[in-house]
Length: 445
Image (cartoon, rainbow, N blue to C red):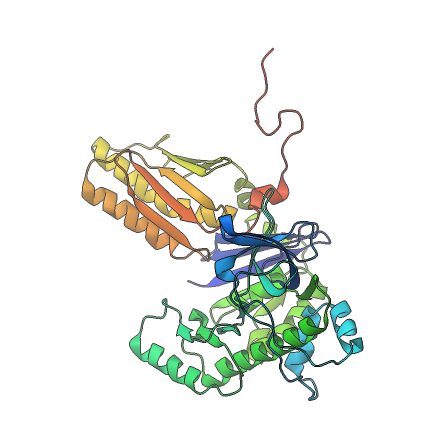
């Protein structure tokens, strides 16, 4: 099914809508006042170690210290490497856009003293310097989650400079394709350490394109390590792509077109796409000049407003109620105005089968995470329960976030989890009412 990427840009925010067959399938938002830290790499300093919770708090120069599990801290610092002295390539010039300018200036002015190889003994020590990457944004009172297992995602591969193994995405199932990609990995002789994971986007891509992507990432890593050795902790040494550029990297494929309503970003994206992907990608990027706003012209403005509502109505007249709480997300399936000439069992099965894909879609659109409990309408037949559960799992497989689903319980409940990496869509756009303190009810006198 053909896909469209719609990007709306204002001074304060960027919104990305993914359409599949003309229907809203996914949604992302990035606010200027809330920049995600996901993927950023910092040179941090260990503030404290808590063996009782198997973790350490690391100062990375942000408002809150990051939390690092000791099991994720087996690559504590940097090994001495040779500097890149050759003339910067086009790819390296592009990398400069994501390395903080202050870091580059300090790196050039730093004294070129020989670096000592640090030890990797665990547990970490107080005041020890560590190179860490953010894997989860701050949430509530918690600071960002960190790891020393650095990973740099490209279009076709992910480079893991600290992990000595190669792999291929499990979503690539054809044995002949897995064999071809494995042979391409074996041909890589341009990197000093680490390993690569081949992404699903690499299917049927040529060796030249995959190798170019891998070389881009290894050059990025060399630059990051050089700067991190010269910076004073705590400091940011690499800033991850912003939302728009990540969308181009990950989603701009053969059957996908992109429309953006900012001429300035349109020009930047074309240059980025040509460098990272190739000239063929430039033709897929289009500028929307109006007169109608982009989302209104594509008839999705109203649908986007609905993702903040607790009730979601289905075509049959049934509806969902989605209620986030402090500890979990509750999804209730209701028959509503649904009418059926069949038995109550058949009616319940029909509503649940319609609800399952919509639940998976709403979780994506709202970016809900953590523990989720789904209250399907009660069914007695085991084959009906299996079919509803299979449908839900198939739809969740389309999700970019990791999910786990348990069986339907005797009470008709499905317990599942969806990986939470940051704030929900709703929490970015709304805050609790100062009068009712988030209860959302009007008191009757």
